[in-house]
Image (cartoon, rainbow, N blue to C red; front, side):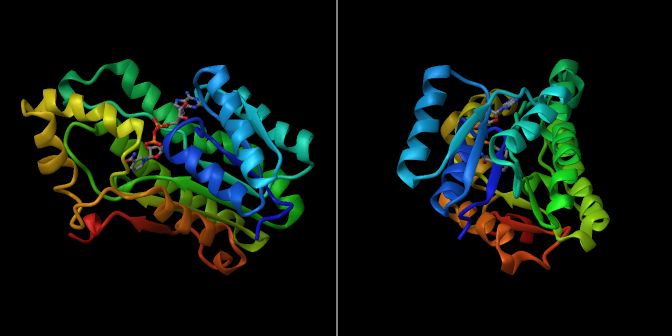
Length: 260
Ligand code: NAD
């Protein structure tokens, strides 16, 4: 039961983040959602979560490319609710191309959004969590934080970086009631994955059907996309009291992908 707790979920206007914000709210947490998108759609999502679960939900528009905006998002949690219990760093983007053709601006954006924003958000959240003597930082990494796939150099580098940051921060705060862990999903059918099906088809010169069967779910022994409910189960464990001694570690929810 997360009643009275306050959570930030970055990149929660779509996909996994939206589902995790909803899962935290369904357990009683007040939530700050964040992410890009159409203002009306975001307001509809915000009001929908609040109404479904009877909690307070706010939206903060911080762009994960901007450290000052990320710091303001964390300060906003304290202004609005007076505390911050859970920080879920989830925002992320992808670009699929061979290294020798990889656009430099895409590399920079992926490192900034998928990796550096995690540092900025955690840095801003730590003083609040230390004062409270309790906090939960959960980084949405990926199976690609543990193993690689071709044509995803920036993404794999960023997600491996997230794993290293997760472990380092965990060691620094271990005696202060704060944990920092990662969730490493395999493929989840979100807009991010739908979009890369076409790009991967182009990069490999195969059809989109072949990408789903032979590339995406080829890596995943269960041959099933990971669902939002399966990720919510991992998240709710990590933020619970039962998760207090899990630190600097990760939960793989990848259908067996990284067991190979
Ligand atoms: P998605 O595209 O559906 O959602 C991404 C979210 O991040 C959106 O809310 C978007 O607005 C937000 N975002 C993007 N750029 C931003 C920026 N500059 N500032 C603020 N917000 C920004 O993607 P998703 O599949 O739900 O991915 C969520 C996370 O899960 C990502 O970190 C992704 O790498 C990771 N992940 C996804 C999968 C998968 O199969 N979908 C698997 C493993 C890990």
